[in-house]
Image (cartoon, rainbow, N blue to C red):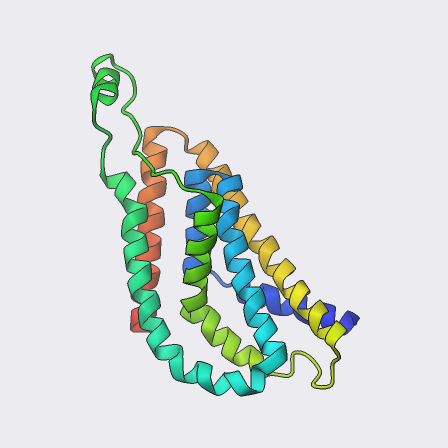
Length: 218
């Protein structure tokens, strides 16, 4: 049982920790929406990792060849989604606030109003980040390696497999929540209009750069 627990923790962190599009996205969401709302994205990513771990310990040998076949189409789907997402994240930094309130603030000598970030919800981020994690090429590649490896003993019983999946989910979730919390702390520091604009532009540019890298890396 302990071996299954350790194997699950290692698998969960191995999927979650590598810096990539999901990490950049979660940090940006934390900065823009705060830790509580952005936690929806963390749970979405961790849930998909848990689903992958479940498949790995139940039908890994059968699924591995299929994963290898669809990895390339998923990579291009992920590239397209990341590009769109990067633009959406960067837009608040490119679009100045307008309207009577903004004009009054500027005329009165107050600081320039910050960019408007469209509000979202815990549930919406859960679905959005979860769907992106599902087609994220880095996750897919690792999953293909995981299901073909001896991470868990072949003769492991149901309790050990359940422990493995729960440990992988918990490890992934702890890391994703750390990212959103770090992002929210950055957001608190960058509370001014310039900081909010920089956060949006840097986050969007980073996601777009990761999309380009995914497109250029077979």
